[in-house]
Length: 389
Image (cartoon, rainbow, N blue to C red; front, side, top):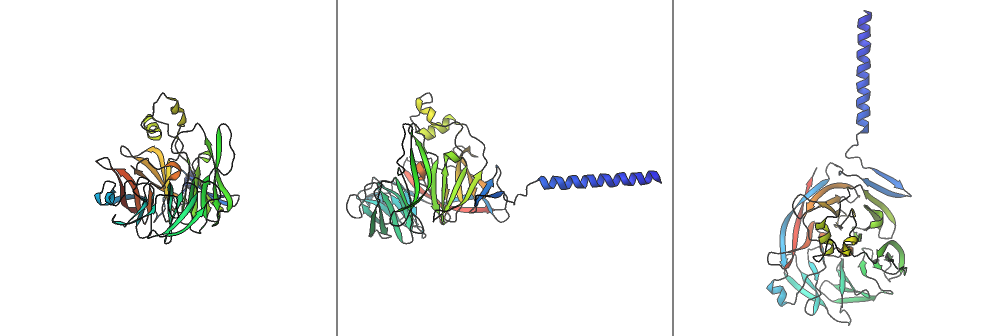
């Protein structure tokens, strides 16, 4: 009887041990849908890890379906004077506004969603409504905004009629209109320079170009010739997203009033600077043994480039090799800054200097450039088809 009691007690102890061990083990496993976050000085910090979070009902990747290709060699466009295709933006109806520095007479060409010519405007020159070196086209409601040579912003309606010109009070490199009619300007306005580097501000201005506050500062080293520099920004869906090489894989997220509302952080695997990547960064004349090789950091920065769509998702190009030759991995973040998936893409390494507008995502479509079989540049439009958990 005593023996049986001892066996029963032993069995109970074993079951209790395994139950406690199971509870402890389960408590150490991170729930895939539980987001790692904290509050730091009143700012939400989203902490993303190597693997994406799995959230039920959330997309984790996508496929691309080509809808349209607009070739620079198209005869009807060439006859209209469209000799080049550069930065562009897209309105809510899918109309495309393309800036071309080599165009005859007019810099901006408006194409409809099928790629048909609609109108051209913004004449070359120095008079009212004329441009010399246009950059950063933007659309706000029914108006087209464009920065010109760091001197002014010119505003047109969607038919190319001049509405207004506003001159900068100090020289800037880039100027972009925000949804609340404030502006985001980048330029050497800090005035601080040394023999080794200069500081450039990214600043928020009001509608009359009066500075409200500096959002970030980029330290440009004079001997740093690598492209793209790891300092970029996008403004979309009511927020401003900024990355800076001094902070690693971290986005600062501001609202349109200049308040820091979120930090998005992510762990990553460092990628060595291969010869292939050095050639992509430095151009066809790169020589492995030349002095320019020192301008490419090794390991590489965690981010090459990023895009944001009109719903607030982020698409972050890394230096990690993709699934097929020529492809690189893109990290996908939802509008709350949560890492939800990855996608292997082969997008051209062009127009990435400070996030120049050679690629964009609007209306659930990816717009970008590629080279066709005859060596001509063409804009291609892909429909994005999301895949959900």
